[in-house]
Length: 472
Image (cartoon, rainbow, N blue to C red):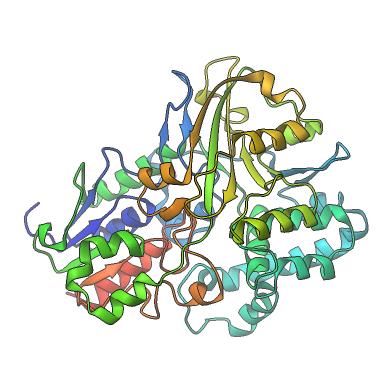
């Protein structure tokens, strides 16, 4: 394609979303990807043994099925098939039982004893509010279309999760369940806005589900690529952009890049004040990830854990809060909070008959060089004795490995930037998608609404480009 209307750098979900938005508006667009395969954090590979498919980063997609943009694309017509496990999440406890996050609010509440009523009341209110606030929650900071409804959610969301859990719930089961949800924020649970993450993920289990893409994460990426092609967009892989000067002439450039890699290619063209602001952008904690090839399903003490693809390993609220606090302070807790996914239980095509795949990660200080294999596997063994006996092969990804795989994961931060109070509303700066250069935009997870596979960052950046420089 010669002289397209727009060039997108990076073919992750947000880059593809930006390209699709522009192409659907009738603009010519080319998407450039440095790697040989597209998808960013939404890719799959045979990491361990031949014939066993592993997702490189993400596997479970509650935000994708809730995303207004992705829903409108009807990706099922492009070959995507969602697999919904019976339960969204399992949270085993040391007494041999587990709390499950079911699609039904009533079924979830029934496990929570003294907190059955408070949980039911909370989630019923949120489900009622969601149709009125969803597009604001999954969008940039702006005056809401439903200010009263959003204020109700916001008053809860701004609270620290540890405070919210202790004041809202009295029993250890509900507190543990909520702590695990809130820990996806990758922030200490004593920090503001961590409640918002816990509420959003819990709510999505009841209104959208926590599904997997049948055939692996790559199927979601493939569906997005087909959608782009159907509207005339082009993807070129194996093109590593090192400078804006290398790009073909266009009216708009959209960068699915975190601030650090963006500065590497655009820095010389940017005003010094803006460069300094991006250089001060704060990255969050990193991740240490393990993939396993297994001889059988994980032998959970609480057998109901086999009903969920996602399993949170961290025991109590206090233990999870301690783990996240230690990591944020630059230390490595002996019992890290572990997020585990067991996809082959629900998508058997990911492994040959009689074999299974699973992965897990824990949070670590940004760019940590420490090996956390033993601590992660100890946490699995704690709730599933005999787990290690089933391991046929392992694959490790340190924070440095994650960053090599995807330069947006600076120091292993899969969220592309800390989700603290300031960076949740002004991400990466008060300009959001805009840069000081006309026609140059950011569209990565370092822009609103932030991390997650939802495509909304790319969509909003592309809409802005259409309004400002690509108008007819």
